[in-house]
Length: 159
Image (cartoon, rainbow, N blue to C red; front, side, top):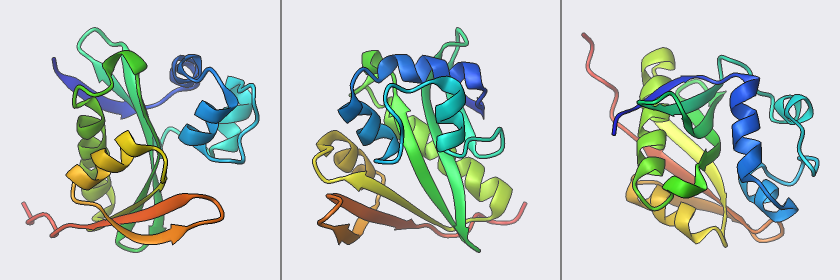
């Protein structure tokens, strides 16, 4: 099946929030600052979502299959955040597709050659996914129980 990335809308976030069924799942996805139970209007603001930094992964039938954010932190580095894939599609490579497409968009729009992300250490499937993409652990926060991971890529050749 083919998947495409598009700017997210609040309606897409509602689909995502339906996948989040506990405070722990909300924390794993969005971090400790989000309010449970989530509500689209409040959560959209809490995650700083805009149509420029938040993207939905859409399947051929126009269903939301995942969501992620691209946050610019440094001149040549984009931070990937709040990456989530439909529970029904997990462990099928969709997270890999989502991350690759987010990185492609960041590279094309902003010329980024580096990527960072944070992941909770006990979110083993996510840690495994990010390692498979080439991310390495560069820092650890034992108090918050997360890793900072980083990936450096070569700049895309000019067209």
